[in-house]
Structures are given as C-alpha cells and as structure tokens.
Amino acid sequence: MNKKILFIFFLFLLVFAGFIAVTQEMDFFQQNPDAGKEYFVTPPKWFKSNSGGMALEETYSKTAALRNEYVLLIETPGINEIPNQLLMFFEDNFIAELRTLFKNAEEQRRQWLFKDKNGITRLNAALPDKQVNRNGFIEIYGSNSDLITEYRFFNNQKSSKIEYTYYNNLLLNCAYLINENDIHDSEYVIEYIDLYRYNRSMSLRAVERVYHSDLQIAYDDSLRLEFPRNVMQAAGSFGFIAERINLYSPFFGDIYSESNYKMIYETDERGRVLSQTYFNEYDEIIWIIQNVWLDNRIVSSKKTEGDTVLLAEYEYNQNGERTTERNYKNGHLERIVRAEGNFDIEELYINSILVLRAVWEDGKKISETRIR
Image (cartoon, rainbow, N blue to C red; front, top):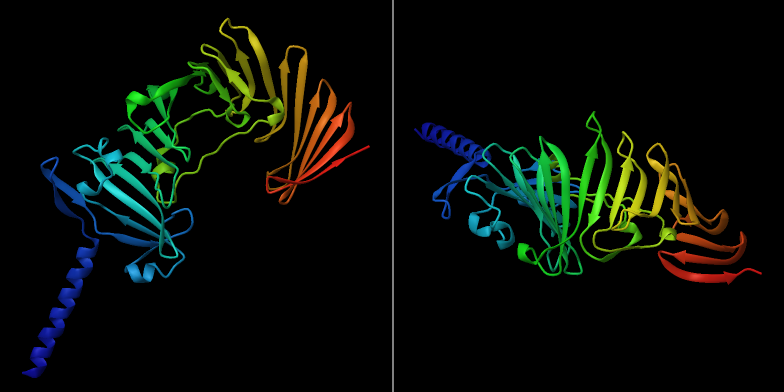
C-alpha cells in the first residue's frame, strides 16, 4: 500500500513539474483595459548577454542569469506600465515588449518594442533616464517596416524629429526638425529637408538639402545624411543601436546657413559622396567639396571657394583608423595631425615651413613648442 502511495505521489510530482515547465514557455492573455480586448503576454525570459544587449543563451532563473556580467531580460509589460511618452503611439492590436540590459546585476538600458498582430515591429525606443542614460530615441515604423518617424533625445535637453516620405517603397525625402524641450509636435521647428534623387536603376545619385532656417552647422554635422535604418538592425535581438557619422576635416570650417540656401550631395553607385556643393538663395555656388575614395575610405577632400582651395589628405592604419591628416591651402602645407595611441601631434606651417608643434593627450593639450 505504501509503495502504491509513493508511486502515485511520484507520478503527481512529474505531472506537476511538466505543467510548470510548459507554462513557463506558454504565452497567456491579460485584459487590456484601454482597448477592451485580450492582450497577448509572454512570461519574462532571462538571457546571458554581452555589452550590446545580444541574447546569447537563455537561462531558466533570474539568480543564475545575474551571475553573468551582462544579462538581458525580455518581458511583456502591462498596458499601465508603458511610459507616457510611448503610450500615444500604442494601438489596440499592438503588443509591447521590454528589453532590459544589466551589467553586474545593475540596470544599464531599457529598450521598448511595439509589435502588431503580424509580428512586425512598429515602434523601437530607448528613452532618456536621469540615472542611467540621458540620450534616447523613438522610431515609428509602418506596416511594411518602413521607418516613418524618428525622435532623438540629447544630453542638452534638446530633441530632434525626422519625418520620412516614401513612394513605392522608395525614399523621396526626409524633414529634419528640432525642439528645445520635449516631443510635443507643436514645438518642433523645421531646419531642413533632404530630397533624394535616383538614376534609372534606382541607385541613389544625389541628395539636395534645402535649409528652412538660419543656423550654424559644425563641420562634423555637415555630412550627416539621414537614411532610415533597417528595422531588423533597429529591433533585432543582437543589440541596441549605435549611430554612424561621416566626418569632414575642421580645416574646412563650419557652415553658416541661411534660409533658402541649399546643399547638393553627388554620390556614386555605391552611395559614396563624391561632391558637396553649397548654393545661396539665388542658386549661386558658394563652395564645393570633392572627395577621392579608396575602397570605403576618403583619402582626400578638396574645398574650392572662390580663389581659395583647401585640401585635406588622409592616411589610415590596417584597422581602418585615420592616423594622419595633412592640410594645404592653395598648394602650401599648413597643418599635419598624426595620431599615436592616446596622443595627437599637431604641426602648423607657414609657407610650408614648420613653426609650431603641439601635443594633445585624450583631447587635452599637454605641450606646445615653437620652432625657429
């Protein structure tokens, strides 16, 4: 009799354990109080991760997961847990997903995803946080995964908004707007619009940027062309987003743009910018920058403005990092900058003769020597 009781008890434990295992993997529903319908929910899942937030290996307990340096938690929050900044973009047929990245058991970053009933990501966001992260973004996608609107938040409390327009899945233009406060549309002011031109094979051949306000553009923003990121890159399980920016030499100076001025970028079949031409409101050329490429790197850029010709030549190491820059004005060497580890060595010339050498460490000048 005792053996039969033990057998039944053991069988019960097996069935109960199986039930627990199944329910851990099963999705379930909760009531959506706003939509008045069932809301699709999945149980929290913990993954061993890396610094980029990649889901490497699922672990079956929080305690085991947090023993790793980097951990990713994927969960489906309730409607009332969605931040107010995102709630305006949430629709009845959407499902929210929250991804939280931990380092040494401390929260590093949160990423929000909204998916529709077809499993297509319709929103991807990482909001600013006072303790962890002061930068952030919100990306809004259409039902065909085209990026429609993009918000960016910066440390200086400013934010930007980019609106993309398509025709037959082809990007026609994007408008760049700026806001001094938050994401209320009424406070955004348009700065410029990029118009995209294609050849018969639908390869991008030119971008025309029309400025709608007076502004100063720093040299490192002069070639920031806005293209919508692929949603699979934005919302995939392999990590959070990082921006890629092309930089021009500060030797060319900043751009002081006025309303109705425009910039035209000419590209080749690989999308590399070959020239950048700046026009005033009367369509008169102010200056032009021409690039020479070697593979995927610019080896020289020449800026022509009236009778002044500025030339920047670049050298790279085997890792593709820029190590040397030489600057010429009307054929005369004026400046050389060399990177050596954490140090930058800057040499200034007059009539191609060295007159000053400065050494910079991690962006701070540590010495300056006049050459006689």
